[in-house]
Image (cartoon, rainbow, N blue to C red):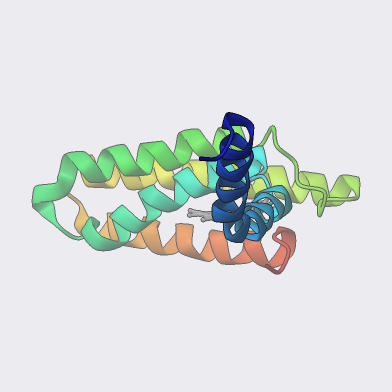
Length: 148
Ligand code: HEM
């Protein structure tokens, strides 16, 4: 018969050994988490904008999605306004900063035009506004978004 002390020691050893293989996994996970990059406030706003953009891509020419399309265009306009306060560090000079703000103003104006066209059932105008948003996005990303 083992002493209570010997039994406790044996139990502790078994517990340690059974967890040992998992330890490197925990350690690797911790490293992965600490290396993950936090989204910037601008990236978070842009990501929301991306959802409205995707929905419009699917529905902008559908008359029965009018209300959703109006809401998605308006959503982009509101987010464009918020993005203006989050100047990325790729906008270095005053001219860059002005170009950044101007581009987002244009985005908001165009999105509002799209909302009006959708509300009025003018699908061709709504599609044109969506195309203009896409173009502004392409130009804005080329100038201000870093390569991933
Ligand atoms: C409808 C138009 C636009 C859409 C749908 C859009 C969408 C996006 C998306 C999905 C991202 C990636 C966000 C992430 O990392 O999770 C992004 C990033 C970015 N966008 Fe836009 N974008 C639009 C217009 C613009 C414009 C006009 C500009 C500049 C004037 C711009 C500047 C940027 C910048 C600088 C980033 C990088 C943010 C960061 O990583 O910190 N975007 N955008």
